[in-house]
Length: 175
Ligand SMILES: Cc1cc2nc3c(=O)[nH]c(=O)nc-3n(C[C@H](O)[C@H](O)[C@H](O)COP(=O)(O)O)c2cc1C
Image 1: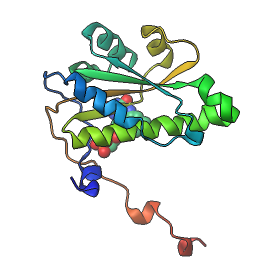
Image 2: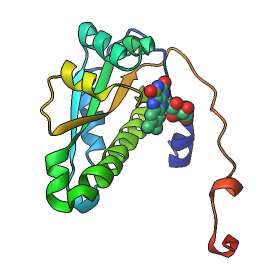
Image 3: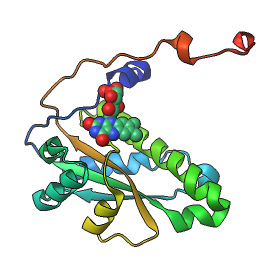
Image 4: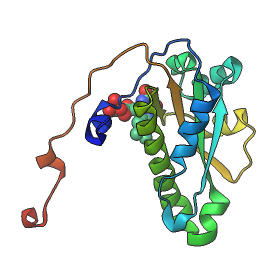
């Protein structure tokens, strides 16, 4: 697919069919996300793949009871490795670059998933402490996103975007 069409086609989907994602496809999606850029090539990310209902149930509860998450056959918990992120760039590495690095990996995952016909939603509203507890994460791992993946059971219309005039300034527009 033309890349511009792909970028426009990606949607947050919150209703999924029961069909499971083949393991090879899931691996391909995640491995492709690893090509994302990261500050100093530190790659401070970690991905935990959740497919069992009882853990998804707990994650949905930790995500402020977003029950639709249970419909997704896969939930990927994206984490920052704070130690790895801090080692090279200190506080800026762990509090800023690592957020941007994982966001770049997530967006790569979402776009490639779209290309492969896999629907997704980026979930950021959750209680971090609860997610850490559910997965028994070490203290140096900070969960930053839950990514639901599966086959879409809905086709949401594109939500409106702010106008380009509103958000893009060329230098001649600066007063
Ligand atoms: C950082 C971040 C956090 C988000 N958290 C949630 C969330 O907790 N629950 C949810 O349903 N959607 C969440 N979304 C999805 C947004 O609502 C969605 O991207 C936005 O409405 C635009 O729709 P689109 O993705 O279809 O273009 C999140 C997106 C981002 C980037």
